[in-house]
Image (cartoon, rainbow, N blue to C red):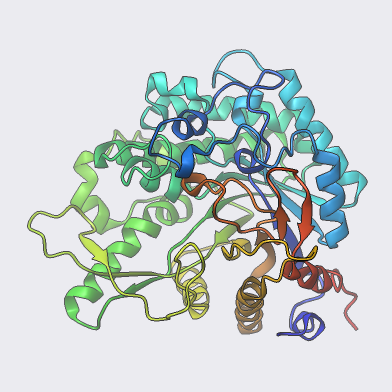
Length: 454
């Protein structure tokens, strides 16, 4: 086991250590204080969509246990908490009346963090779109981007003065491709044209959100969180190498290109540009406004081979075999060198601002035994990826902080409650929280920061 004090010495003294969650995954109280349904409420209640038909009605009951959970964060010794805000609590219909009780909850949350000297890193959108907006087509409709703009303005006007940082979106790859092309996440579409419309309107909404922050809280650092994919070819054949490059454009370039360069990738547009929604004259300038930071969520590499199926849609790839035989309980390959390769490539290819590792962690489903949770594989995973992060910083890569995913076990989207990512165990019957071995280790590490450099 890597000693936390030994590891800490490899990081700058002002490196930020935090923990992260998302609103729908922990809050529960889905019908409380004026909140109305999100697309995930509807999706969860449809047979066959989420394991066991689990839903977010109770989750970790964080809405009713917020002070207890903020004390838990404080006890872990971390400097920052990354959380998301539930749009259906703030503007329950997506457009229309503002729900003051929803805003009050996040007021109390941010004030609670400030009282405990914990930095507040907010995310405006972590997938819980108000269900009412599906009447207009959800993210496939351009009007949703403007609904997001108004929602963002409402949130920033209320709590922006007390936030330390804000992200517009979390992992648009998931809310675009996983949700509209692969059908695995809400709203469960399996349609490339729908996904392409959702892609551009999500990118546009990001830009409109940045504009809101710049106008209303010009000193508030704003960024976006991307689950960029570290993509490897299944072999060294020319076909597989080309497939990996196409996959890079499709899975990374369609977000990094517009946001950081003001353009969609050439290969992507050559193949699919005619199926994109209308890109209006000012759109790319709005999308590519300068950011203060960006967040990287990394868990596992993507390995692809060429799809030889005639007329296969771009990127025309199929999954290739993993290289490492180590997998987490959710089945994801553990391969930390991919994190280093990804950061190097992204920084060499795009003009990126400083980075935070905004999510990193592992799914292991150990339970409580004699009051303890021995999740050594998770501890090893986090320590290994932090070691890679320290190496990257030593190379000169601009990485400023790390947020462990997740603070506690929670609703793991289509996997329901059967998959656990927390460094704190949650008993869903009693809502008792138990800090795991990985959580105690992370607490020891975080206790070294911020550190006065000699």
